[in-house]
Length: 164
Image (tube, rainbow, N blue to C red; front, side, top):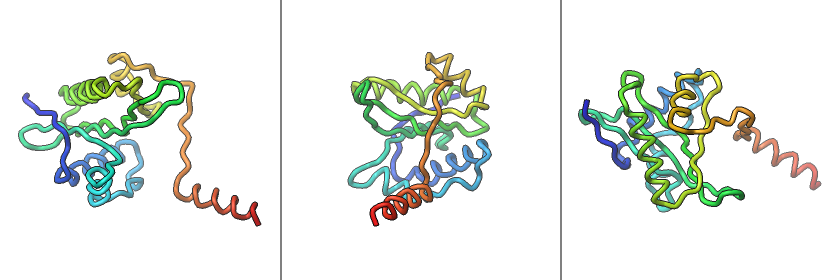
């Protein structure tokens, strides 16, 4: 099977959103995706892009993505955060995931990145095994912390109450 890895363009975002939604269903969070194609186009291709993305094409159809962005580590310096590495269900096991991860690692190396980091669900053993075979260190003793939109509003309300 032949495929091509390339940098995403704005016109790819409808398919990118489909793959994001497919991942959300796989991760048992089908209603969690709140972004739109327009959000992806603005956030990824506007004046100050918030992310970069590689896509994997098979016979002209996007079947995988790697969406990532820069972060800064107080311990390491410049790092990349791989937000999502997604391969369509029908193409899993085809080598697309490896090719996308390879592209992110090569890109990070060209940028002088000190670390590439991402999260994986603790029950997703096939993904964990895949990452470990690639040499990744799965930090099982760290917990991911999120403050969602409601949590942010509640936090700010408590700050404002404390200042009165």
